[in-house]
Length: 201
Picture (cartoon, rainbow, N blue to C red):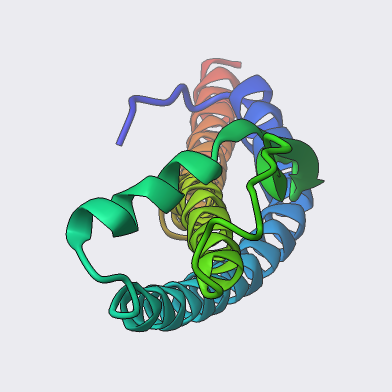
């Protein structure tokens, strides 16, 4: 605990600090609750994305079996080219987090007569898989940012609740006792001095 001065000025300083901590604490607690909820939602979205990615990969693996050779299967990957991954941002509890919008694919055409009938389905499945993977990366970034902010906010709440507020209350209590003792001591000295001066008269 830091050293304090046993003065009325220090008492006022400690009381002002206590008021400030008590004023900010509810805001921090509200932010913490909001972030806890957002982290839970983020985990749910990540879980749903992982399940969807596994399903998309399973579907893709099933479709690849229709190709007569791995070389033939590889040909269709040239029909899928990512141009951009579009994201935007949103503000949650005072922090900016990325949001997945969509994946833009190049508009590649192929000869429908000279490609196997399942090429269309394979291309669509590959696009789904790539979109879900891109979304997963953005969701992971969201989760990391929200978790980091929640950790910081929780530390601040704990600092206020468990350290700063109790410390201020204890400092105010000690100053009051010390000031009371000093006042009592001053009154006693005054009485002794008055008594001595009366004896001299």
